[in-house]
Amino acid sequence: MGRPLLSPYPYLSYEYHRNNNLVRKYGITLKEWNSLFDNQGKVCKICGADDPRGKNWHTDHNHTTGFIRGILCGWCNTGIGKLQENPELFAKALEYLKNG
Image 1 (cartoon, rainbow, N blue to C red):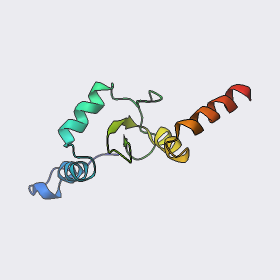
Image 2: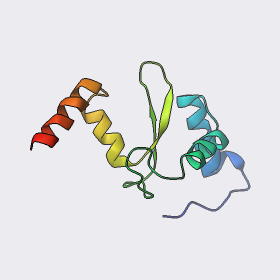
Image 3: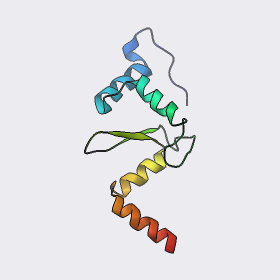
């Protein structure tokens, strides 16, 4: 899926809106987000997928502290959410899978 062509009106561009959303939600600019993604090899920080497995990449963050942990594919981001970001549930799920 391609991005729309750049507009002569910067406030209409994809980059403008993406940057504003990142600053509002996470306190980082699009340039900082791109640097973070580049530094993790442009892959999901958990599974290593080079495809977002969905519409877009997800900025994973701690909902209590706001700290950005990394960029994830849709599947890994959903998995973390389904297990309520709870390490104890992850440990139980891992044990379940090992014994299954």
